[in-house]
Amino acid sequence: MAAFFVLVLIWIGLKSFRSGLFTAITVVLADFMVLGLMGAFGIPLDYGTVLTGGLIIGLGDDGAIHLIYRYFKTGGKMPESLEIVGRGIITSNVTTGAGFICLAFSKIQATQNFGIVNGFAIVIVTLLILILIPVLVVTFLPIAKGIGHSVKDVRRQALGVRGKSRSR
Image 1 (spheres, rainbow, N blue to C red):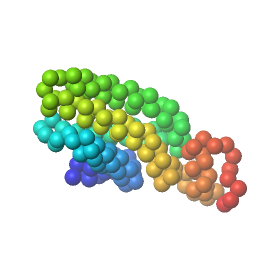
Image 2: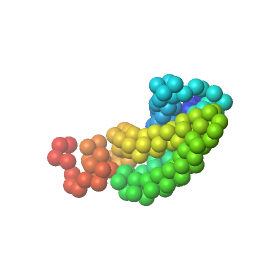
Image 3: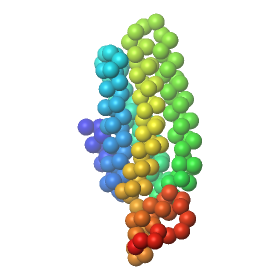
Image 4: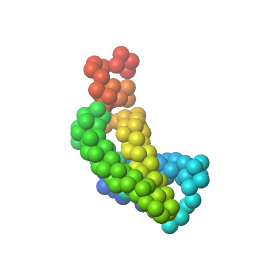
């Protein structure tokens, strides 16, 4: 349900349904990956680990919005967008993740689980923001519209490749 609200709010804020959809896909995929890892490692869903979903949505939305917004501001240049906001996304999420990983040294099992699960959740959502969002955005959210711009040309421009494609 929260992913749906994320989709709607980003759709309104960035005036792009696809931007909201890509962000929602990223956070839902991260949630499923974390829950799968919890099941694989036998970590129970308790009062601490249940908070992971909210954390993923918060951090995932934040990074995705910054990246997509910068993509729009740079005119569809993803390498430039990643260069500008990528370091901030990584720094923010690494420091938050490090804080949660410190909880793994607690003597209380529930607190250990909380720290470990949230630490790994932050790593997963950060990787998805930096890998999946650029792929989805460059592939399905071209900036340039109008005569003379093929989808192939827009993708080449977004990836920073010089020259025009040969096929129109």
